Image 1: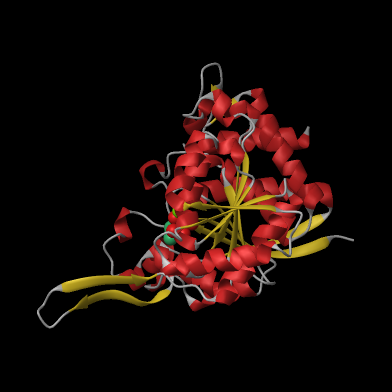
Image 2: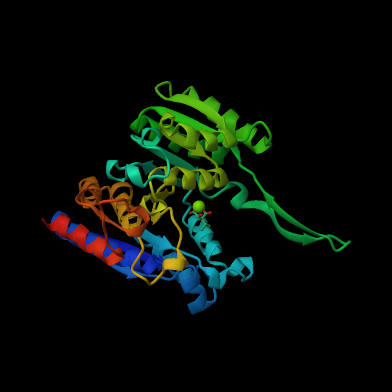
Length: 361
Ligand code: IPM
Ligand code: MG
């Protein structure tokens, strides 16, 4: 029997629609091959939603996402909306989507593919074999803590405020995801905080340490975030699974992404306790190359694979997509961001066509 899934597509802004189009075509091919059926519906988020409705996350979009089996998001944001008041910015829509669906766990894998080692800005011996999973807390910390805002004192002096706060419960549930993720990988978990300065980080470290005794099979370590940033570029192979707060995870996952050659390669999965997950590339909307058929669609395609694996539990279909990505690189196809001597440059659509050819061969 054909398994049917309702998937909400959020192409968003910039290069979003181009990379989403490639991914949908890939998923259609996979559907035929694995007897799946995808019922895709588009919805508005980010700048596209602001232009159409005045809000970055219309209620109708959230409702559609809640009622679907998976959400594929491309990217949001662009110069055009950068000066709007905060509640009308594209990024606010993305944060509202994460909060609205309760997506507290963000998995960001940074794995270097052998074909791309020479596309990395780091030396071959430093990056060869890198395979890191960053588990980023996604609905708490300084992104959401109260009070927040820009307040004017009676003297007229303005003060900008954000609050980094975590409750024990918020720390415990993301730590659990961290430990369980490490168990399925190499059994090493590094918790990243700033406990030498921040009280919120001290609580984080205390809770993660306490939970460690429940996972004797996981080797737990702790690093301060500044040291972690340094270690990531110095000796990234020491890391297996990293668990960290919202803002530290935002920063470290961009750094981890670059180890692999290009941020244009990395997918992510945002998951809640249960319910619909959102699957999106780690990269942004790249407005400077939007509409020029230059974007690398592979992070989006790999996000589709993560949706199959983590959201829809169709791991064989996910494997097939990941193998096709590897194969397309093996044959030598490259978008501009991952070019190296002796390879063949293609655009976003060309990369999609090459993928489909491999999937169908
Ligand atoms: C990310 C992005 C977002 C974040 C922005 C666009 C709100 O940088 O997903 O890493 O900071 O979480
Ligand atoms: Mg980021």
